[in-house]
Image 1 (tube, rainbow, N blue to C red):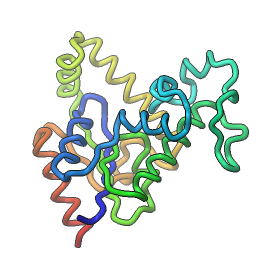
Image 2 (image 1 turned 135 degrees about the vertical axis):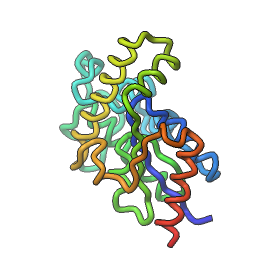
Image 3 (image 1 turned 180 degrees about the horizontal axis):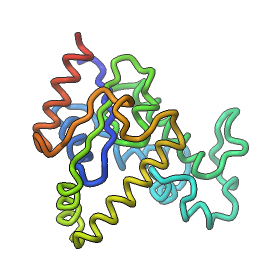
Image 4 (image 1 turned 45 degrees about the vertical axis):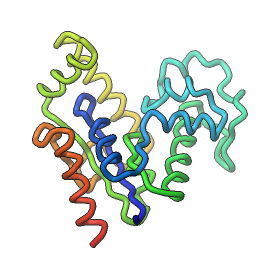
Length: 208
């Protein structure tokens, strides 16, 4: 099978992670989401807990503000480590890990500016998953046992953080259609149907 590289951005509560996992399962390739943090931690020596806290967070993360010596870590970047704050080091570690994985093999990459990281990779396919606010509120209420008000607040908080992270580290705007090859409302076809749509579109575009 030829190399498969699919990146998937998503609004919070749109079931983007589930769609990414289902897409990877149907294609028989790895899905990189939270487990990517574990790989970054292993490859770089950065704390897994720290990477998890900084994951897809803007540079004014609370944890960063209370870390007294961000340069005490053993990890450094060739010609670019000096002068970086902790958030930037975490981003670069994740960036390099995504890039190295993509060079070695196939994968579905969820979030973490992966469409930006793989923007110059041949046949990489970039997807953004969205959904109406009402549907997202219902999903978040059920998944996290929250009230309607709390669910909406959580959605706004998570989307704001993801947008700030993406916009800070890339030359594009999070969720803007020109940054992706395909944007899909996940409520139209559901998780499995959306995964099938992604795969069929990918095959038509990237294998022609």
